[in-house]
Length: 305
Image (cartoon, helix red, strand yellow):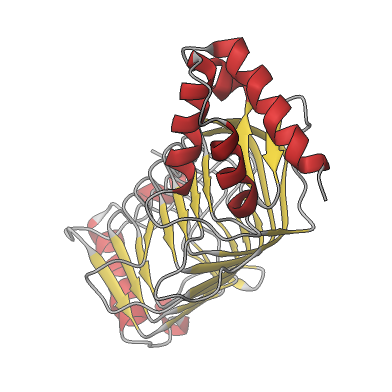
């Protein structure tokens, strides 16, 4: 237990923690609670809110707080404005966020397992996440639904089985192992695909990742020796499938399965770009033969006008 944890665990500390959270929930000033400051932020390091299976903040600003090392599992943020706060190395397990703006915040090294943006419990609009540090954060199983991400760093984060659905991405960096991460840009109700702008995957290790109808503007991809990149996938995929119609080889069967999984059930946009690691291809039954066939066919269409 850290020294910061300790100040909240005495009887007096628990009362103070409850007072802090009650005031935050009511959008009331914290200045008369005798809390120290760290620069421009109020020092709430290690904050623990006792005896609460879930803690909810609705329609309030959360600004200029240092919550490093906090213990706030099951926190709910609804219609909030979270700005210039530190949550680094905190426990925010199962954090749920709806219709909330998060800007200039540090979540580096935090436990954010099960983080969910949006969901059926609350009527949800798009959420804005801007200038946020998620480096080394635990984000396994996180769900980013209808989130606009700008100037965000996920370097070294555990994103295993995380999903980014209908997200906007502008100047966002991913680095390190990315296992079974899904980027799904297929829009609802015939709307336009939101493109990913300046998405940096150059240092990412893509392992069983999936890209559905993703359109990129000025991206940085891993090297061609690591990843197969197919522009205009919505146009190229049907053409490759047509070329494979009379091919009964194991490699053709595997490649058909891979392409059909990428374009079903609702298809992909014509201008989408598809990515798959060569390592993923080599793990299919036809292995090296599949990689050679994919390189030949997709390379042929990449060279065509």
